[in-house]
Image (tube, rainbow, N blue to C red; front, side, top):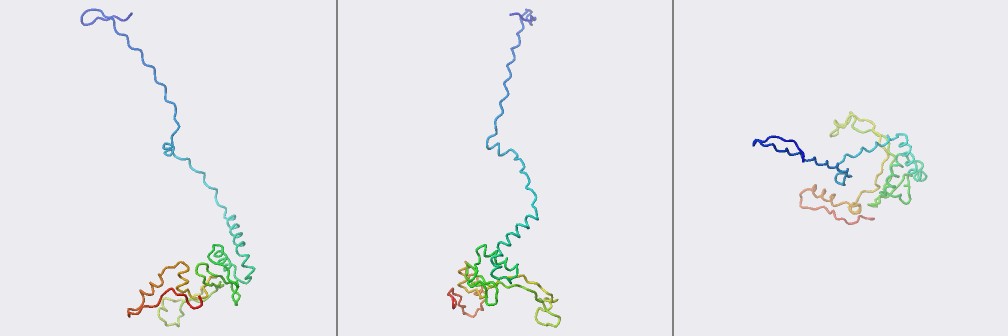
Length: 202
């Protein structure tokens, strides 16, 4: 084998060792698709923003729903206020009330029955009244009730009778009402009769 000669420290000429051939470079690893764990760590692409809501379209849809709910009641009570009929219609649609039989009181007001308790309700039209105390009134707390001012009340539902203990229980109520009475009862050694027995006529 031919090689370069050099003189060693012994004085003899010896052939120099040839450098070993370089090892071939390893091929680059092929790209690997991310697994489930790696995929979860990758930043997700931002979802496109929803289109802006059209207020006019939303108002039109709400008006359409309002008409659909109110029209059956309008045929029964044409003189009732629109807001009141909508108030009652929404609760009937949700299953909380049903129309009474007959659906009108002798005064011509819409009447409904509460599904949970069976209590009869009437739809009152609302109106305006003067709330507060006038300057001439001297009753207790009159100073904090001044000045008297007109207040407008929207239509509302009002039970035609008081809510009895048995009606409260039928509606899913606990004995919270009875407990409140017992805690407020004078400590005279007497207990009020707050049993859940039916009231007269129930």
